[in-house]
Image (cartoon, rainbow, N blue to C red; front, top):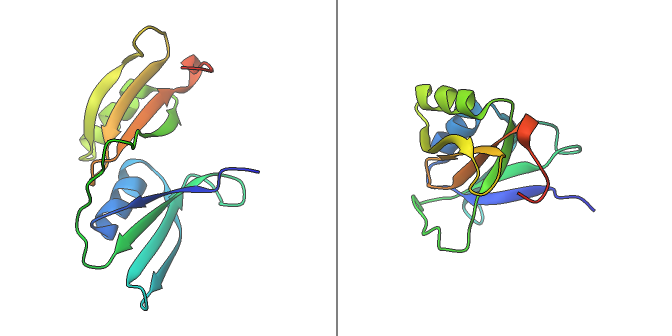
Length: 133
């Protein structure tokens, strides 16, 4: 078994594709439209779906926002340099919600950014990544 994808409902598909591709550096892997049920899907990621987990961005036609609720946590992305990634994301127009620094009670360097729909994305610095943190 392996994790295939995580689905996020988005209020503006093009805005979300722009964020995940231009700001976070992912690629659009495929896109499809379902006219009968009125939704469009875009799959984005860093690698081919046959080898890597990806994000499924789901746009339900006519719905421009969602209540994220209190159960959702975040998506985690490994980066070489969390502070540098924050700077690049901010300069590209992205929103940094927690600057790079050690996780509370640990040494792993993390940061948080937010996508246009309010989904949290944790950036975990590669060389300090340890299991269980």
